[in-house]
Length: 454
Image (cartoon, rainbow, N blue to C red; front, side, top):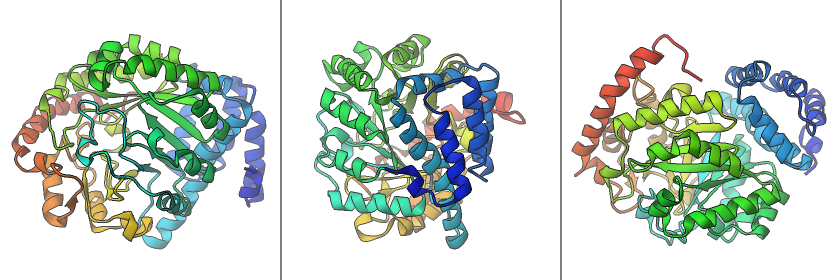
């Protein structure tokens, strides 16, 4: 990949050259200089605010500053360049301009991220996995995935997350990553199939971050994923670190493990193992086998929120809390507002957890699917609640999902996907109401007329 051949504008070329020249040797002054240069690559006010916030962290000794040092001191120089080119230049800057142009022409904006599940094959059957309803057979053929990724690039989508199933069981995984070097890929894996050879191949490609799922210590992880999985995850960390692959960690948060995975002790271990980013996803009963006893209580959900704030203010690791971060993105991001999902059957779903669709990617283009009646209906209702601590149309505002289903009449994308909107609707409403009582109090006390705590 020759970066400058991809960038046609001379002024942009010079800025990118300067940023690349500053990589390799990390220092406060170099990092701060890169933020000023980065601002020149975008006219998007949201992106500029994000860059300015990064600069504030760098100038004021915030623990987040150490994240950049960890990345730059860990990655080989050539992979630092690939990371900048794919994640920052393409996904943020160049991709943002393409999405702007598309919006001006067509009246709706492509999202920042696509989530793609190319296979449902998996070597584990985790207790509450949101994919259980799909079964193990669905898989997208390589030619279709390749077409989808080219369409992403045309739309300005350069950040693609690969889920499953288990992505390492998809026979063409490395082929699709190698075939699209301009895209930044984030691969979620259970870690049990990672080898030295696979880790080296990820490192050689460079446009990849690998996110390993881990539900706490050995007891919590093996209880959720199966006996012996935790030890295999430890081996995966060793392989990824040895190859210097950019790595993150992810936890499904349940009533049984929330205290563990949100603890400073757990985060310190993840940092020690090499994780640059920790992702939190609440257990959501969408797999056709709803188990409400696994859902966090309102108090536990707030505990996670408070712990994430504390971690961000004290630890050198990026943290994403998919539900509690609603205030930072003004509520729900599904339906193509910020992201969407294509499952292994080809169904184009508004969200990883929203198992309904009106389009299958085999029979439509990505651009057409993003402007479907279903996606327009989702976006028209966003935000689903003025309290962005209650962003979700599944667990926080279930009446919204029922309205959508009644209006659009989508297909449920696997057997049992309808249960929480039909026979278990009262349980969903009760759960939403319990969280609302606490969340509304927190919203009034901590967020109304205030900036969210970083």
